[in-house]
Image (cartoon, one colour):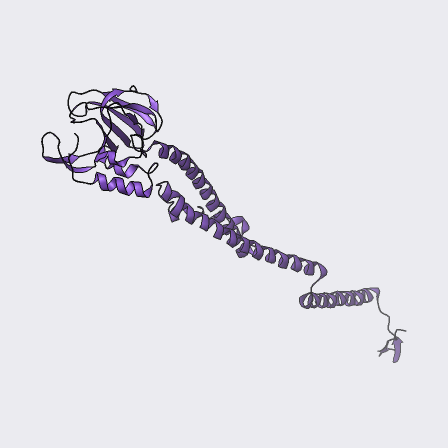
Length: 323
């Protein structure tokens, strides 16, 4: 029950009951209401400051889960990066070495992405650094995988060409049989059979009966079919591509024509003694990029290590050449 208030009236010398106006009552009630709301707001702020709301708790759990997923993603990217680096290492130091190709420069494999505004859309959040760092790693890894993929495509193409090149390079002996005593003279300084002076012998001589078969030592195209009174006499030059040529001299008869495509082991002619020659034999040369090199290095396909060693011993003797 509300207390009744009285006020002393000096005019009547008595106490009179104090009447409260509606305005005063409204003001008083409004003051209480505002004070209550303010107190409630303060209490609510204190509550949310010290305690999380259900929504905030849910968001915090989602944020923690996101951080965990980013950590797992970062670890997986590190593992994938190791695999990519291993493949890149084999690519540069094995595959490209085999196919005589230059390794991919590290600054190409590790190159970043241009533009400072690339990740602007990820800035301004509480975890922007985490998101940006992870995105950068993913972009870098994606680029490395792309570069490696292109490199392997090139290695595959080189492998296809290498197969063709291996079939083209002179790699067998040009005469039939494995009787290595037929190697009469090898590459190097030898005594000329006619002038009896030491001269550079730029090929290998194989003795055999007149009319014996001569075989192409690699795939290629017949470039020269020529007859001379002296020098090489009747001879053939085959262009194998990749800078390689082979020459077959002193033939008695040809079995090919200029421009003809041939395979390794095809019969191309017959041994004779035409040109500057003192006995039936084949003078055989291997030419790389215009330079005559030792044919003894190109018999890998049909000689065992023991036979190859014997052939080297016979051909390296400082005996007389046949041409």
